[in-house]
Length: 412
Image 1 (cartoon, rainbow, N blue to C red):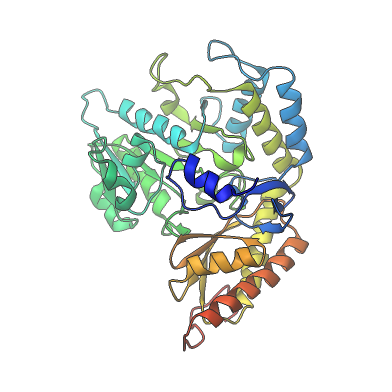
Image 2 (tube, helix red, strand yellow):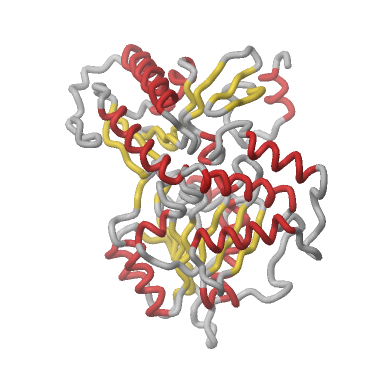
């Protein structure tokens, strides 16, 4: 397409930044633009493309389902929907009492979670508050946005839906905020949009204890961390806890838009018929795609691969002697590289010039969320291209930085 920059600027709603390229196709961990240039994709559609691009299992599942049944309505069920619900319950470990609601995105899954929290008001209606964390991100629809602890994206749309109290991600703040007026607490195990920042050790375990004590729900937002990305099926499983609900999206569909709210135990009985819904909930095409993605992750050992490759990436980054690099945060294949200077945008641009797609959630962090199929070849190529991008930024930055004293993976 000629002059696609002008077409995008003229016809597309101005809610995103300027597009970086017009991509035409992909395969594995790479994508190509209109000029035939290849890019190594280490963002994976922002933790979405778990199987990379054009994976045969996903392509076949979509084509087969499209030829049989694309959509029915929520007056009926389909075999892919039932299969996916049972699969998510098994992988999450909900037990027989667990239930699944299918949405179309992560924001919609969190909207359902917000309403679930409101249903947990107690017999006397006393539980009216939802606790959320500063710097959290749960989506841009109004309910999800009300639980998002980022004033810059929330304030233009105020007044928000009421009842949300924001707290620091500390054990002290958690203890101070909890009482018998709390209906639920929602938290991401790793705050991706805040710069890939993990919760403090023991935070989710303490949240579980307090939620149980006061009759509140513990809702874990696994939209970015779920589907094997952190080296476990879900990040909450690494904490040895059982939440009351988790929200899912992104990686479970491998690029096909789908979200889910998965409930555990008594929380599964809070919704009654007519209290929530969606025209596309449990759509046969999207659920068939998600079954293919999760089936391939399981059969291919990609959860373990995420853990192993994540450690490899840490080692590679730690071997780079650059004054711009700080520590590495995150788990598995959701990593944040701290920078010693606010040059993340410049580094993203330089990486794109070198044929590498990465992301800057803030000026001092680079986020990596590559496909779970990542292998030695892609890691070696990342090493080469990332070093070249760092050299470009270092050369363009008139700096007298001394080598960072921050340890990366124990190598500096």
